[in-house]
Length: 69
Image (cartoon, rainbow, N blue to C red; front, top):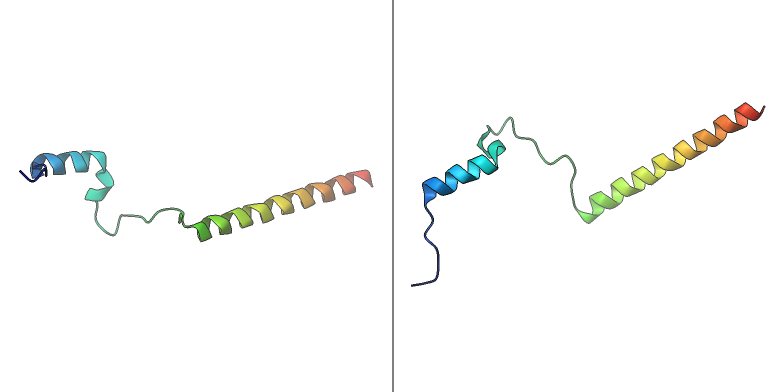
């Protein structure tokens, strides 16, 4: 005995395609992950979000200034 388990390929594939139905699709219909998950990609999204928040805050301050005049 080597300690390895014998896998019933038919049962394995049935469960695999039940758990991951999109893996059964054509290559043209599959989509890549919506967002990359690397540290660089996360940092870039965080920076972009921060910049957008700053723009919104600046816009709100501008609108308040206009209301005062």
